[in-house]
Image (tube, rainbow, N blue to C red; front, side):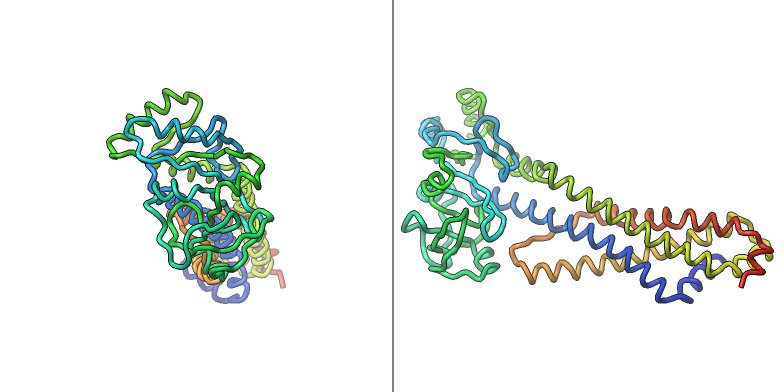
Length: 368
């Protein structure tokens, strides 16, 4: 009986129901799109780091696993020391720097010869390696997203570069410049922010790692799989990103709460006479309260479904607009936003439901 009343009330006011459900849907989509974009970029970045092909990563003391925020640096001469360790096959110094010119992203300064020994070389789709200090190598995703071709000019770190090569994506960064140029631009000559190391055999990794820890006691040493996982986790927990995500979730929940509250409060006023009839037929306060709560939960559930539709539509739009963006939607966030939609709907309907239940049946029947 109550289910029929709930559905008939939802259908009898289609525009109000649709507007309420859509507001909850926007709440859901806002959260899921943010999480999808951030999770996708973090996971894709982790894959590219792993795709370099190194076995071990060496960082300088006091460096951060949030690579964009890391200010640590070490002398490139350490590469010579590392290369002399038994069972080390190749070492490549890399200088990472956050670029804010024409977009946000990490630029890798590399010594192309040593970097090729680590990665087995780039797969060039167009052009070739660096021919001068102002050359840049970009991957195909970056080139497509920014409509760049061989010979085009790119502004990075407030400096003009010429596209010398376009390569397949998946090996570290999307943008590479000569490490000497990077050191000059940053003002730290003969420095690097990490060393990529490969061993002759995978079985040599523990021995080389132990030797590095013994010789360079204050330098963090990671095997590549651990490093990629730690970087992803550190970026996910990075203060500004975490604060921004939590703020968006809070504001979206607040919007859903107030929309449901306004909708259900208006509904109690519109249906005062109906409440009086129900009470005259023997409906108690608990029945009336549950009726309104169930209606709010139905609207919250419809809002969640609409939110999923908006989320997947938004993902397609962003993918078309910015091909360099990657998306990943964790299952736990789908479940969390579903719970959040129902929770905000139930919380928003709580007071209107109590108000409806407490109405005097005589006054309610007399209400016009």
